[in-house]
Length: 265
Length: 288
Image 1 (cartoon, rainbow over the protein chains, first blue to last red):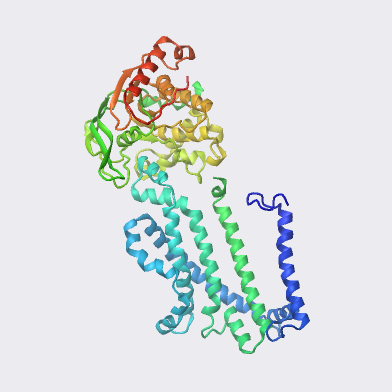
Image 2 (spheres, helix red, strand yellow; image 1 turned 30 degrees about the vertical axis):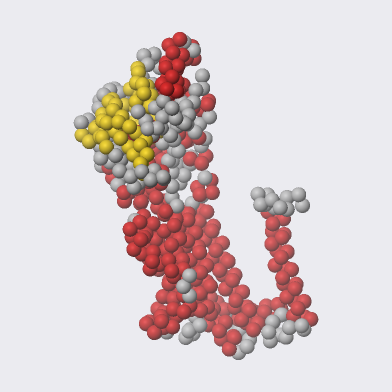
C-alpha cells in the first residue's frame, strides 16, 4: 500500500494482469447478478449467458456464419477507408506541418471538423453519393481524416528545430530537410495518428452501416435491434469492441516494431 | 589513437586547406520585449586567414553563438541577420548555409532512428554530397572517421545506446567526414562532465592535427580556451564587442604544468580582467 499513491511505481506485470482481469470479472459478476435477480427484465438487459448463446448462434447457424460475413464486410470497409485516410490524410498533414502558409490556408477548413458532428454529414453524403458502398467509405474516411490531418500536422511541428537546422547546415535543401530529417522524426507520432484514425473508424462503422447495408456488423446490430433481439445486439457490440481492441493492439505492436528508437530516447 | 587518426588522414588532400573568413562591422539587434531594440553584437570585426583553432570566449548569453551561427549561414527565424555588416568567405558574401563550413552544436543533433554509421553518413545521402562523393569513397571515409573518433566498434548502435561524450563524437565525425574548410563549434562540450570534456578536447586536438582546418570554437570556459586555442578572442558582455584578441604560442597538447605556468596564469588574469572591465551579468567558467 506504500506505493498506492505513486504514479511512478507501476505494479509488476502479474499484479497488473490480476487487477485488469479482476475488474472485468467483477463487472461480469455484477451483470450476472442483476440479470439473475430479475431486477431488470431480460428484454432490457440480457444475461451474459444469453449473450454468449446469441454469439454462438450468430457465429454458426444453419451451415453459415452471419458474424464472420458481417465482420469481413465491416473490416473490408474499414481497410479501404483506412488506406484512403493514410494515402490522402498523411501527405496533407505533412504539407500543412512543413509549410506554415499552407497550414494557415487549410487549417480553417480542417480544424473545425474535429468538433463538428460528422454523423450529421451522413444525410448530405447520402444525398450526394447515394446509399451504396461509396457513401459508407466516404463517411468513414471523413470521420477519421479530420482527426488524422491535424495530428499529423502537429507531429511535424513537434519535431525539434535542431534537426532542421542541423540538416540545413550539412547542405540539405529545405525539401530534403523535411523529407530526410523532419518526417522520419515525426513518424512515431504519425503512427499514433493512424492508430487514432482506426479507433475512430471502428466507432463510426455502425453508423455507416445503419443506412441501407445488407452486410456488416452495424447492419447486424441494427437488424437485431429491429427484432428486439437484445442479446444479439450486445453480442454484436462486443464483437466490435473486441475487433477495435485487436486492431489497436496490432497497430501498437507494429509501431513498436517499426520505431523501436522512440522509447529508447 | 594515433594510428586511427592516421587512418582518417586523407592522403590526397592532407594538409591545410586555405580559406579566409572576414567578419566586418557586424551589428545584431533583436526587438526587445519592452519595445525598441536590444543590441547583442556591436560592430565586431574579425578576420581569419589560416587554419588554426580560434576560440571565441565570452560570458554566457553575450552573443557569441549568434556570431558563430552567422559564419555558418544558420539564421534564426523572423529576424534579419546580421542587422548590418557582412560575413565574407573567400571574398564573397555569405548569404545562407554554405558548403565550406559545418557546425557542431552543443545539443548533438544525432538522429535517434539511425545507427551511428548512418548518422555519420547522413550528409552523403543528400543531393549536394551524393553528387560530389561516390558511394564507395564515402563509405570508406565514414568507416575511417569512426575509427578516428574511437567508435568503430559502435557503428551499428543507436545514439540512445551511447553516452553523451560518444554522441558528441558522432556529431564531430559527421562534421569532419565532409572535410570542411571551416569547422564551427558551438560550445560542443559544454553539456559534458569534466572528465569527458577533457577527453573530447584531446580528441579534437588529434583530429585537428590530421585535418587542420579553420576552427572557430565558442566557449564560456576560460580553461578550455587556453588549452585549445591558437588564438583567443575575448568578447565582452552584451552587447558583444571584441575586448581582447591574442595568440597562444604553446604547442598542443598543453600540459597541466603549462596550465600552472606564469604564462598561462597571466593570460587567464588578462582575460578575467577584460571581462570584469565590461559590466554585465554573464558568467564565465574557470576550472583550473
